[in-house]
Structures are given as structure tokens and as C-alpha cells.
Image (cartoon, rainbow, N blue to C red):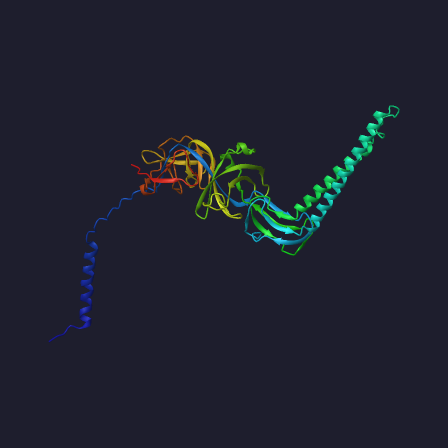
Length: 403
């Protein structure tokens, strides 16, 4: 019996493998699958143009400061005999209320001395009037006596009258100095600081304390020169009738601008308006929003009416143009002029009509006639629940479906 060996099998395998490989290479190939390439259409969000009469609103901020601040000083010298309990930092006082008392003894003595001097002068005047009357009678009874001023004692009478006037002046001065020993509040106020204590000796002109009037407060509101274009600002307070809405700690309060300082700060290039707050501590009303001095408040100043205004987010600008989407959803450029800015929005002027769709998406390389798709969920229209009032920096947005 014969067996196959490696030497006998190897040629056979080589021949069979070659035949199989040839058949595989000569077999028909399947046709390649064709893939159609489609152009990628960018998706944009759009805003529908609405021309409306809008009120510009300028945002600002500032600190509440007293309209009147008075550093009190001692008008006479002496030792402090009493300090009122309410005369302390943060205390509220009424006009005419006693704050401190300087020992009045010496000044009371001066008043008494002046009263005595006035009484003597009046007595001397009465005596001189009697003498002048007697001299006049003598001249009438004796026709040989020549009438003259000295003979009728008129110089002596004039001197006596002057002495009375001088004594009365000294008395009035003494009374005023006595009254100045009482340190009183000149108006309703809050105490900012107190610099004296009971038993302390005061010299004339020494600082006693600082009072801040609670009748009204002011807020200096800086605005840029460009924002001033939206406000009707006049130099005279009677012509400045800008309304202001102030907010502090979640509370809101209506006020008004009473004047413009009329000068642009050379350091900040800002113009300052001054708003007034009546009764900032609500001492008369008893309730409501308090505006303590030194508080930081935010303010929105209602400006002039902007008729037929068009408001666009500033990120929609592509240089000096906007991209409008036509009915066939193709982009077309439109040159516009920016006439003002408010925060993240711009007021524009151009051939824009109500209903025009402006692309808000910044495309890398937009071209005229480019086809786009609209993101309906992100598309918006500018609207306002109050047609006569609008805040440029806080627009209200509503959804818009683009067909």
C-alpha cells in the first residue's frame, strides 16, 4: 500500500490554488453605489420689523445725598452744661429742637447790664428833654435872648437820644449772644456726627456736629453724551421735567429730574443730572420706601418719544448693513444707518418696512441670494405691552412663526 507524501501533495495544491484564484479574479464585479451630494443650507433666526412710537429710557445710577448739609459751630464760648439725648449720630430732630446748652450765666449778666445802661440812657434823655423845654420857654418869655441850637440845648438832646440808641443796640447784642448759648437744629434733620460732650469748654467757631436735612435728598445721575440725545435736557430746572424710576433693595419709587449740572466732567466725559427725592426717610408719610443717605440706587430716566423707531439687537449688524430674508428664503443685504445705541440694542434708519424679516444669526460668509432655513423656535418679534412707553434696554420678546 502506498501513502501520499509531502513531496507528492505540494505540486497538486499549488495547481488547485492557482485555478481557484484565477476564477476569483475573473468573476464579474458589482457596480459601485452612487451617493448624491446636497448643499448644506444654514439655519438662521430672524426678527420681524415693527415700526413703533417708542420712549427712550436711559439707565443710570447714583448715591442718595442730602440736599442740605450743615456743620454746626459754637457761636459763643463757654462750658457745655447739657447735651440732649437725641443729639447723637443717627438721631432724628425737629427744627428748633435744643441740641446742647452752653452755661448762660455770664451772658445773662451781660443782658442785665445792658438793660441797666439802657434805663440810664432813657433817664438822661428824659432829663435833657425837660431842660430843652425849659430853655425854649425862657426864649419865648424873653425876646432879647437869641434863639440858637446850643441855647435850646439841642446838641445835648441829640447826644442823649444817641446814647439811648447805642444802649438799645448793646442790649440787643447781649440778648443775641445769650440766645446763642442754646444750640438748636435749624431744620428737620438727621444727625451725622456729634463732636461735643457735657462739661466740654467750647471756643467760638468750634465744631459741634453735622446735620443733614431730611426734607429732601438728591441723586446725581451720570449719563453719557450720546445718551443725552434721548433726553430733553435744559439748564433751567423749570424746563427740566424728566421722570425717573428708582429702584433700591427691590423697592421702586417715582421721582423727577430737577436740573442738569450743565457741564461735562472732563475726567469721565459724563454729564450729570440731579433727581430729587422728597422726604427720603418717609418721616411724614410714615411708610413706603426709605432712601437712607449714602444708599446706592439704580435709575431709569424716561426720555423723548422716538416716532416710527426700529430697534435691532446690535449683534445683527454686519458692518453697516443688515441681512433681510425674502419670501423665497434668500438673504439680501440692506445698508442702514445707526442713529443711536441703548445697551445691547441699536436704533437704525433705512428702507425697512413693517413685516421685513431680519436675520439675527451671524453667518461666516453670507452672500446675496444665499438660501437659508429659519429656526422658528428662536425667531422673535419686538413687541411692547404699553404702546406709549418702552424701555430700549429691556425689550419684550414674543415668538414668531415664519411660514
